[in-house]
Image (cartoon, rainbow, N blue to C red; front, side, top):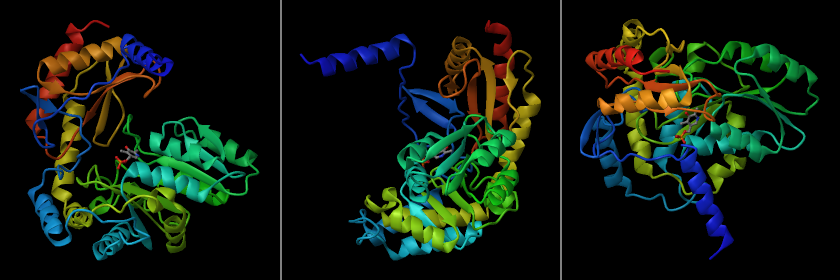
Length: 390
Ligand SMILES: *Cc1c(COP(=O)(O)O)cnc(C)c1O
């Protein structure tokens, strides 16, 4: 009928043929280690709900009370009339928590990242980005139209050479704090030193560190003991914080500039004020969450000691992201399928999300897991390594 639709159908079929077509699984239960998929109970190691707050009743109560007070919608964008007193309270709380002068609340981390980069740099400027950065940062770079230099993962020497060679007016170094498919932490102190040496901004996406790392869960930058007007810190609020949204924090004029210029902040309806009420409650629970973080660290250590793998390999990560490197795509899929058949849900991550030959299981642990959950996972993997052929 139309070449357009025929082309799209052929492309969909090609995705299926290459085993690249993705499938959603519908969970009949709230976010927690126990999921219900197609009527089967599954033990899940997939979520980024690191502190187990997504299902925390006190957050649901704060959200309900927020809805009773504020209703549902914000009615407009923040700069028109969709900004409420509770948003101010949340931003002040976030800024104080991470030790910055000011914070700006975005609806999602994707929007924060894709809006902040083009607000800071444009044509004639240069962006230096770790090759394993999150897609939302990559999209922000594409929108910025600045010159892009992607350095090999955590390769400070390569980054230094790129900075030395640059004649750009404004320079922006962009990095994930905790890399989402590897679980390792960026060399933040060294990156800041380079930013100072070459007069660059340093944007740090702490989606997986906020709430988890650092004193009281203040994040990766606080853990590294760093503070600088050059740092634009981004924390997301749908992972450890258990709600949704994100924020940028930094020096007051920088944040004011983002408020004026970030198109993903300006041209979108403000998030429901009730969410901000839930987020204020979450901030309190994160701050007093040392028990959750201690339990989580215990689970990470437990997995490391209980896994006895030879062919496969637990990747060197101290964060709750615990990838297990399998290697080949087919083998990684076979392991994920075998786990699934035993009621354990772990996603297999394949190229192009990760480099060819490094297909892996991405295990993520949360404070809602019990030690026996992790023991079951480790024992099952130890056994499967001998029964699944590479
Ligand atoms: C999840 C994630 C984001 C996006 O945050 P959302 O709030 O889910 O849109 C950004 N950066 C990284 C590294 C992430 O893992």
